[in-house]
Image (cartoon, rainbow, N blue to C red; front, side, top):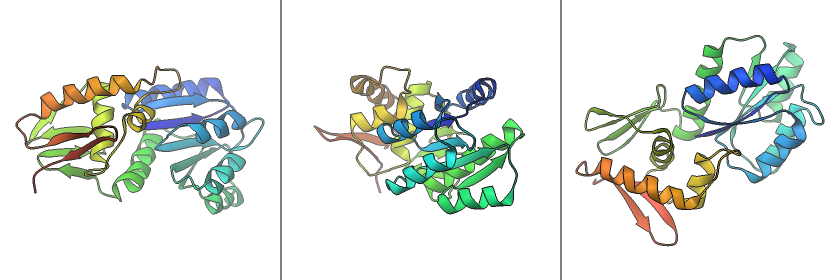
Length: 222
C-alpha cells in the first residue's frame, strides 16, 4: 500500500517516513500543498497524511480539492493547533482522522492501520482468500496456517490483490500502488513479482489468474 506524507518540517517528515517505511509501507514525502495536490491528481494512494500548516496551499485546501474530485482515499490530518474549530473544519471537509502534535510514532502507526483497515477491508482485521490470510494489524500473511514471509515488493503486490479478492487489477494499477515517486514504476516488473508469488502459492489452492490485456485477480476454490 502507498502513503502520501505531506509535512513542511523536513526533520519531522524524515522521521515519520522512516517509521512508516520500516512498517512496510511505500511512502512518498512532499513538503508543500501545491505539490501534494498535483501528486493526488496523478498518483494512486491508499492514504494521505496532511499537515494543516503547509506552505503555498494549506492542508485544508488540499483536502477540499481532493474530495471535490471524488477521491475516497483515507486522510489523516496533522496539526500543531489543537483547537476544536480546526478539528471540526477538517472533519467537515472529509478528513477521516486528526492527530495533534506532538504525538508518539506508535500512535500514528496505530491510526494509519485503523484507517486502512476501515477503508480497504471494511473494518475487518483480517482478509482471507482460501488458505491465504492477511492480518492488517501486523501486516503479515499466513498460508495454510504457516507464516508466509515475502520480500517487500511481492508483499505489496499480494497485499493489493487480497484487498480486492475476485476483482481485476491491471499491471498499471498494481505498479501505481507498489512503486513510489522516486522509483521506476515499471508495469513489466509486476509480471516478475506475480510469477514469484504464483510459485509460493502453488499447491495451496489460492491462484493469481491472468486475464490477458486486462490484469490479474486473486481467487481460491469455493
